[in-house]
Image (cartoon, rainbow, N blue to C red; front, side, top):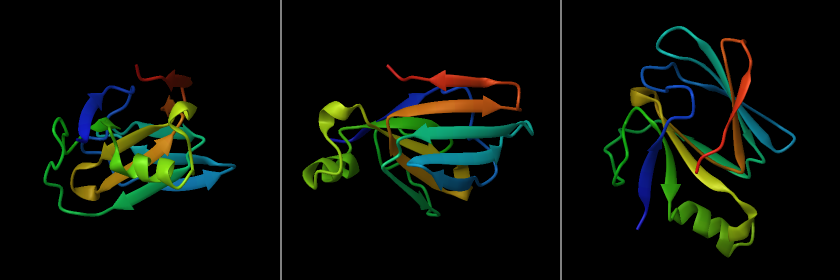
Length: 128
């Protein structure tokens, strides 16, 4: 059964604006402004898949918040990538879901996340 683990990656998507997405060399970079007007960049390293949805969020997973960043455990989407051999379970990928309140939800399967807030420097977020 899929579950959502709320994480604290060093930024918040609660009340943030809708992100701009760009892809380069297998990475996904998102740019958005947090609720406190801080410009934020998040780089998903080796992002093999991503999707954006503008849907009415209803908290479909245990532990999921409509305004938070999560790691999805036992991900059906990631399992489908394993099944078609797009990636292997031992490769270290994680399924991230960022719920931007009413703006929508971004899901990314990537190996690593790097965060830059306000142009003051870069920090790497490494979950568990």
